[in-house]
Image (tube, rainbow, N blue to C red; front, side, top):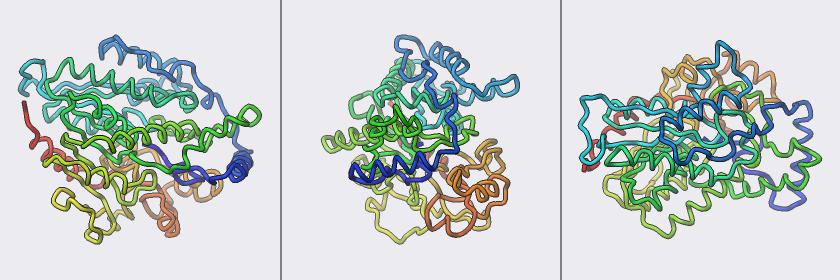
Length: 423
């Protein structure tokens, strides 16, 4: 997922050079008490895609070795858990599933995680597709899974190479190829499908089709970062989560801006013909849901399906009403004020991000409101939900990291995949 920078929403400030340099000065001042650590430097191992020409099993093995060499937080207790959560993975369907006509498997799906995330976010959906007779492959995008500094030098074209590699690996084993992407992964899935006729359909979760145009200014830091290295970073945070980065470099915002701009340009030239399943939140604070709705309205396949989580079901006309289902996202008995960008693909029983998980997303309070940060971290929060201005006014808010409607989401996905042609 593209996590919205803590202090500046989803874009960067100001449209003039003066405003931007004022912003840079302010950012340096705000982060004066935050030291850059080794995790904020590139490892030198993970800014490009280096695995073309190997099979998927070898790709997994080499990537695991790279993660082990590049990460700085591994010890005897955490080593396997952290590597497993960040490494690419593969799942094979049960032997009782039908085989393919020309390949070992009939259907396969490639899973693509979001910006600053890892394949951990894809595991629950991967197991669901495995149980539904899909061959599953999940990749790790370059710059991810190791240390935040590896996003300082990465280019979106390296992510594109990883998706193309995964697609080719899947194509060698399945008759029918599907791509599933979360946030930036959704944008990359659309990008691949626009020039790869082998792809039979897409499943998109909070796709980052459009972010703020101000993100193009993210690379202005290069003018002064030689004297102020902290200006390379929009957020410098504790990075306590082993499966996603909390610190956020300006280059990451720049790359998703360039990628999403490229994809929107291509979409204007093509009718989107293949079946697409979309799930998104109307209250998303990270990407423009209106752009996702526009994409869905312009997609023309009769099997298209969209699930929209909203705090105001039935109050807006989103078009394609027969294909779009609004789902209420408020659960006040669980202190949930609504869904969030971060919540779509993870179930409530996830051991790390779930209802009783061991991670709390409170970084929107760090470091300016440390008393709220500590209360949020120590289970003294009032609500769960998206980090919106309105929600933040209601009390101590923990950003929601799981989908309380996950079971119904799986039911909707099953209806969609069961409707797809099988040959």
